[in-house]
View 1 (cartoon, rainbow, N blue to C red):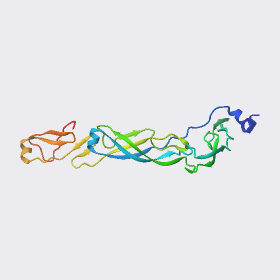
View 2 (cartoon, one colour):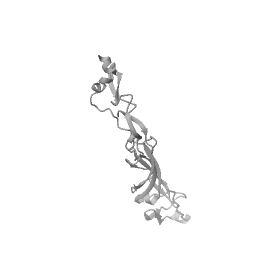
View 3 (tube, rainbow, N blue to C red):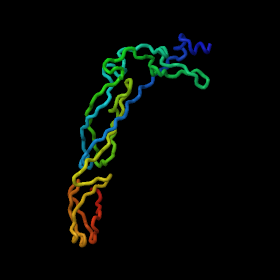
View 4 (cartoon, helix red, strand yellow):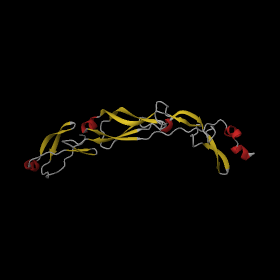
Length: 219
């Protein structure tokens, strides 16, 4: 009868058919890191090396966490169980074995059943020309490994511009101080000052006030 087929072990495989109920293991967690970069490298672009710690898939058990496995005692190795949904018995993935039909018998001695081990890696990071403070460089698939053999997550590197002895950075604007005599402020004068891109001509209009800001574009 209907109730016997729902719970009878002899008919479980027949009830569920050959469909696979195995779920993909979860993707690994995102790694967030801050990297310090000089102002000149942000302006011109560069490649830097950075070493990070991450969770790697255990090489001894291939991320399963098991030295050996046995048939799941909840779903009897089918990978699914029946639940009542909207008044009907519906096959759903077994939460005990995540649909694999297997469970850990003996844990892996290398990772102690965690499926992951600590590791380090050195990455080459491309800093695009024109980068600014707070920009994010995203590297896919190089983050932490997921549980139970899950794919590696991503890494986000947040750019932090190092403090400069001559320039102050405010988002995309660069500021520097330049001393001008009172007479030059009154009469006006052209000056050549240093910038991260080289020498720049600055025109101080006649009648300029003390502590005024003079802007030039593209430098």
